[in-house]
Image 1 (tube, rainbow, N blue to C red):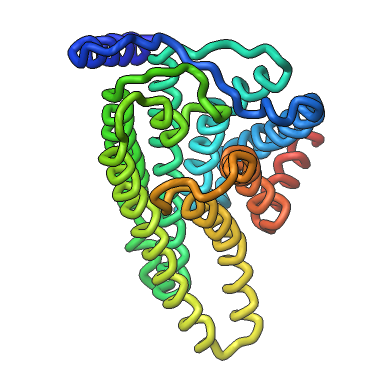
Image 2: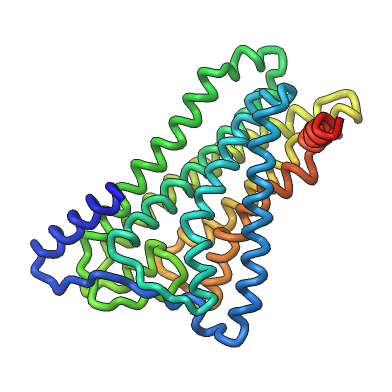
Length: 323
């Protein structure tokens, strides 16, 4: 509430200074072209959302309870699960209400708050995946010094760094977008994403487009490049292993992470690493659904159903409860 109040006052003051008509709320038009299928979409998205919430809650609980999982890799995984949970809470509940026809306007301050949390958490996830890639690199390429390098202090610093970058970039982007004067209220999207909101501006947004592109390049390509370099070194080390069983185990350890990385960075690159949308409205919506609904589901699916250590920890937890 305090954040909403402060953002609301800031937005009002900025628009008052520019002497433009004040737009006080927005209305999402995201799935209006899918009117006949909105109930079906609601059921599908609700099911995926519940699976995502349940999966992430299970991951965080199991990692917290089982001492076998108190390692840097699972510390980063639990932080990613928490971040993904909040990320979906910011967007999906309102989207589900809209699909039911319960369309409620969102205030300017509410839109700014949603955009702030969306950007900060999305960037936080990018850098958490980078930290996980570094953890895998140290574990495979420098196993004898793993416990020394990946200390608790370093792990906390990496998570804090990811959060700080996300918060800083989000504040910069939100401030830039909500300095614009808005002339219309209908957002052609299902949440307050950067470009759909900028399209509502009365003035030319070229400078904002350039800012968004520069920031996107920095927060997507840099962590993606670091993960790519990590995996080149990891694969090089794995191929030098004498044991076929060792190579198989090493590849299995990395498979879960690289799957999530490819989908996460792939969607982010398609969405933000182009000057202006070259896709149709429906294509843009499909991409947005992928990174807001599908990608968060990958984390619990990949790290619970395909991860032997997590499955074993879950079995131990269930066994203790039954006994």
